Image 1 (cartoon, rainbow, N blue to C red):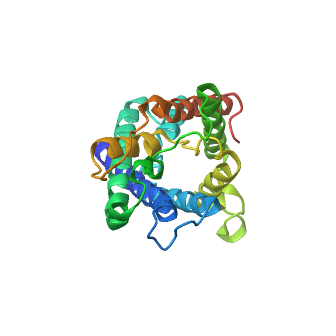
Image 2 (image 1 turned 120 degrees about the vertical axis):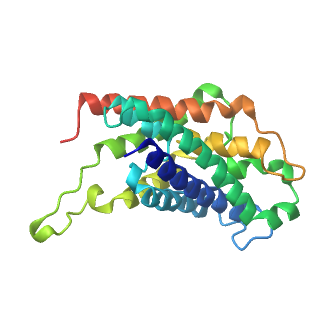
Length: 248
């Protein structure tokens, strides 16, 4: 696949992922929406199936949609290092675009919201208790689970009569959606589970420099490196485990 094709599919998939993921948070948080107060399971489910939708659309490029996945695949020799910058650039721009599309969808609700200074949380993550080391650990662990699942999930094999066998391979991208859902439900409490630098930094950049939200707060740059570094470390650890014990 050409670099241009990789770029376009990753841009599209990541933009849709972020639009839908930040959209479910906006629906939960903004005061004049039909989903106001839907709760944490509402948000986690939305994010899980945002991943499913974005990944399904970006299947031609391998549907990385996440610099951590791309890095892990490169370390595990599943993606050429020369393609990594193309993937990551597309993912970051997709994150920015997805945030803009979310804002456009909820523009009237953002204008009407009574706490605009607190709207960063719609687009990017933040810890409930700020402790850099432990916040980093949380992001490393969550991303490790995600990337390990992706790397160790069996490739598709058909059974008798070409009937798909059940398991991770038969679930396809829906399997990843369920993993994202359980990570959010089980490990997302401390930091909001970025587990994807493009999903956090891209929308944070959009919030700071693009989105015209009146009265918006700061972008919390002091914390912004944690949801980037943590996922990258977790991804490398998962890739090293895969290289030591590759899936059959």
